[in-house]
Image 1 (cartoon, one colour):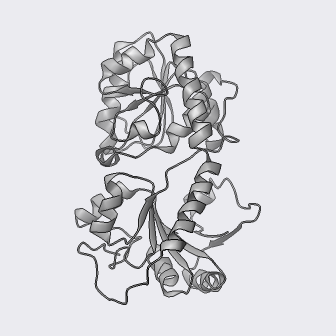
Image 2 (cartoon, helix red, strand yellow):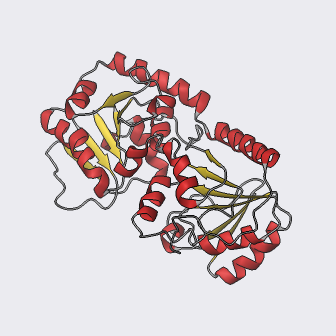
Image 3 (cartoon, rainbow, N blue to C red):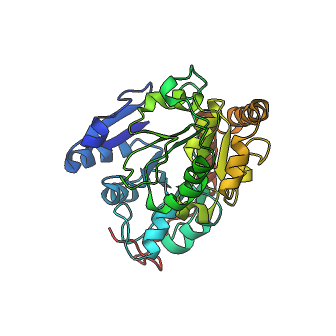
Length: 338
């Protein structure tokens, strides 16, 4: 495997890995040099893939789709966001005016209705979900850290389209349970966020301490961005990470969540602050039963190794059913603006 990544400051300061076994990582600052090297790599490759939010996504797509690589794949890690921007006319910087019609296969971090929308809105010819996952070697139960201890925790960068749900499912329960400790970790939270005396804020949570954060939580909350929740089938990687750490989860409700965890047995669902208050009020043994079941589910169905196997199966299937590529200059009905 060969990865190309634009060397930008906000990743350079937090890069966790630069070398992998059997993997080469090319960090580049100038696309012209990267393009020449990418073209050389594609000549001997079986698969060429571009992801959403790729800094040079449009130009990378052109190189892959103009090459003779046997299978051309686009992987959208934020499909609801992509579709929302396309439909609003704003466009995205990682998909060109021809949409996704030149790719043999489009993978999506979101399933359900998002898969049909990728075909209708962006001209994808074949689609398949490839959900998030967790590496149990990185996320597992570790010793709690005193400054992360809490009855209910939440990890997430501030987002306007998640704020209403966060206030209902985190802030309001904190106001109703002043004798309990609530811990929130994330970036970009405004000064006028509705804090209360029992909400403790972690401004920067290093990636290497995520496991300790979850392991210090009696219960953790998952809140989905509204654009993703509307489409459903959108499991955050945080769900799998928390479960792998043996931490019980209470989550907002969205279509398809039962495909990943059994509600009431492996995960708790909440539609209002009262549901969260009830979850926090469960006994330690009740929460442990839920977390043990979730851990078993994750280890069986949602590890990175399992997803790698699924990717290989999807690629094998795409090769066996690949249709001749159409020779056309037509664009899908709804176009993205580069």
